[in-house]
Image (cartoon, rainbow, N blue to C red; front, side):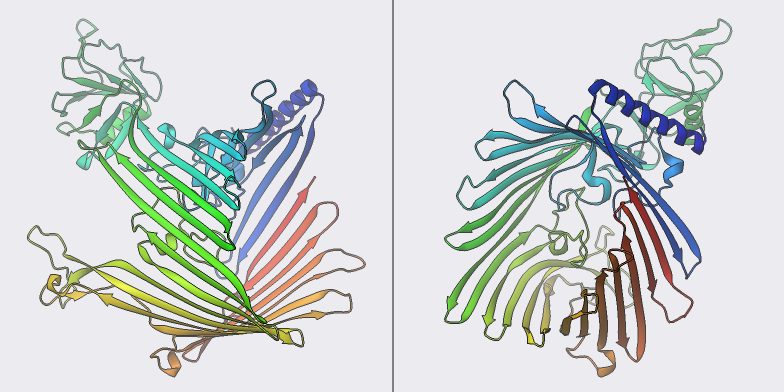
Length: 634
């Protein structure tokens, strides 16, 4: 089916479904949005585009959302060619379309009204449990905020994942892989506190399959067991079964010890009598046509060892459950919050099942009191994060400047705490003092003087395990009482200490430890809003920062200058015009690398929006990265 044909078919299907729904219910509201993004890379000359269509509507109070395109900012599927991939049988793998219905109502007479979500939805758990790209998304059913008792609600869900091979626990297509979980919320049951308990369970199930290849690491599922061989199928025939296959394919006979003992067009076949013998006891026959035939021809050789795993019904082979209990609120004037997490893994893919647990404990508290004209806020925190706390579907971003930042991922393996003081002083001045300390396990490969690994008696590289301590202190002063200018100055010092057990380091070994920066970083900024004749304001910020101050030569100190300006203009002809500009200069060893960013936005009352953005990250005058986005909604 061509792209244009698929477009017409899907459009007609949407119109037909909505028309029938409107006819049946007598009430239908529909709106939507279309976005188009055009990008040009001035460095390579690459031109790319992306299209997103969103249809949203309601049907007698039930919200319906049909989304075509990738609705995530940084999702794994961002590069998928929308027009060339929908709809496909691998909907969970290529997901440029999402369909969701939110049904509002009660499950029984006079019962509480709840929202039931059918179709695609995001799991209602924190990003450090599930939040990396589409690993937070499933297709299934979710019941939201069902009241259990007064002030306590329950959300439960069951879904098949929307991600594909390489993104499941076993790196396989998730046809037998599903997620389930719950979120239990209690608000003000204990006065002043909000509690939330949740769990997310990833289950991988296996049906009957073939293990083959080096180390039996590859897996192949069967189209059917003891069934008729049709086009593009791979059938498994078990002991005692009399198959009836034609010569348009190929077959392999598997012996009792898993050896491929024969390959032919038809094994166990007597051409003289045109009959098939039963599959002998302890033996199996693989019979393939089309893609199944190709698999037998290319992947199996006489003499190979294979293994057939038989299951009467799908069996759970690997699972992961992450539990969480979180609390926040205030008691006796003390603001507090805490997170307690447990991850449980279960693996039955080997002869011996194994069970492993990892824990996380995070607590924070602060208290504010006044002494004369000075307000003082005291805060403290504690953290223990198991180095192996890595839920499969978690968000892995460790950059605190990004919206997808995962604070637990950024501090894996740490045992430590923090404390701070914040003083609100006269003359619009604040002073902040803070400190942080943690201990973390580290490991290093033992290498000789030539950089070659040093092995033990079993031929394995010797790994030396140790600890390191890291301490950080910050001082910040801010004043906003000088001609409308807000000034801020801060200094941060970091020091790390390695500690390896000397008696475990091989003689003559060179360790390659984790790098620990000992440095002082400073930052100063000035910010002011400027009023222009249109009565709009231009917000400007100038920042100067330095790094690598501790123990560094002058030409190794990095200076960063950054100027930002933002405004939204109200003009008599056009409305809501936004302008943003940023210039950044990083100077290190007499080398200046400039970065310029300019953005123009415009929104019209009819739902049409336009955004143009240009980025320059090179000294070359002709090298720019440009982006144009338009969107229209109705």
